Length: 150
Length: 224
Image (cartoon, rainbow over all chains, first blue to last red; front, side):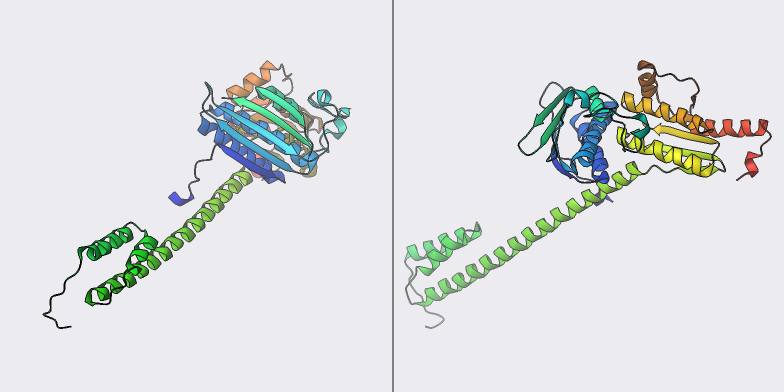
């Protein structure tokens, strides 16, 4: 079964995110990359959560996009940078969108919370778990970047 | 020309052959052939030179074919490796995606949670669990999170809210397998845990249910 053992994940990966299963694979891959870069188990899982949240948003709000993962081990601490790019509409009110249980339009009605397929806490989670959070409106759409240190 | 005859060859011709062969020995077939073809003498030694020319041509051809085959093999290998990696990723995806709700006893649901829990998955789980409780008229839901060691604070908070929503539906909810990190997360954000039962393991949760069912006079063991 030696052949089936996965080759070590390279420190740079660009993934196309189209559906729910891509989100989960991206999360697993990010966790593996983090572990290989020297992250602890807990922090590696946090990386996976950040990646899942950003990838989920790509699918939910932009109908898909690309996720760029990059591990760096040359600094004093290992790091993973995540960049989620899509061609969807920009976030109208970023300050509101990162507040828990809110989207761009303000607080989400709790009765609709489950049916909308998310809690409205995704960006909040990214903000809490990442060491750096950047939002860029681009010519094509948007690019949300997060950097996590190990 | 007779067999016993001796011929004289100028040393530069022999040197050229040696040079051509040494080119061939380091895979430089073009310069080697150029040298061999530059001979224009017509004697016994030129037959040998022609033989060497054919030999080097064929050797070059064989080496080229071998190199091509190796390259094709390499490409196939890379493709295969890529496919294996995809399979592995998909296997991991399936494992992480599936959130089975198992009816371990009649009226008792068990929701083992493994993998990565983000806000979307936690919303999906809540929806499925609440719907299943109503559909199966369950009395108890056991949410086992032994497989989870990290959650975002809001997602953890949501899990507790899910347990409370289960109670509102008239069923009990036990959360089992909370690990130290998540316990810290929950207390850190000051979640109100009243009305939420937590137990060390899935086994403890099932034993508790059996004990309580016995006390209430329900024969849980035969209710399967």
